[in-house]
Length: 202
Image (cartoon, rainbow, N blue to C red; front, side, top):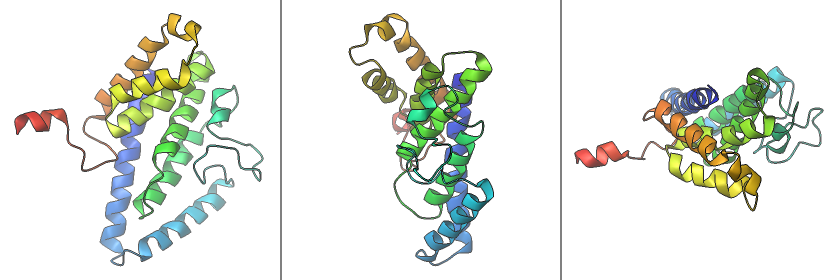
């Protein structure tokens, strides 16, 4: 169930980003003006949400934030608000879609970890486990790279930790990444990326 949510979230992010990009290109003909307008939208979102938690990469907590939500906090109980993942997704999609290049990788980790934190409470699962799976699975679905993300999960969350390996974490990570990838279809954040099926047809 969590993997399905991770996959659908990766689709939502990729599609929303592409649609925002298309909207900006269609309505604002000056490429240099698009990021300016996008920046104004982000400022408006900050005032709407009433928090600066969703600005930046989310690697470390904002010292001016009352909640201190970041990637690290998502691995602890209560470390993410119920809609943290959604707001980070919207903020990032607007930023990238309006013309700011780069910076979607680490926010995807934030989105996945925050969603995993929330799902852990709903499903009664360990928070750190689902935050870790969300961290890699949302990225796997958004980038169409399930194998690389499964290996990344092992590198990040099992270095020298035999307990995690014995507990079946490898299987959990593989299931989360590959199911997220299958559910995302051909939606992805990199339009130039070509699937294996397309390459075989050629």
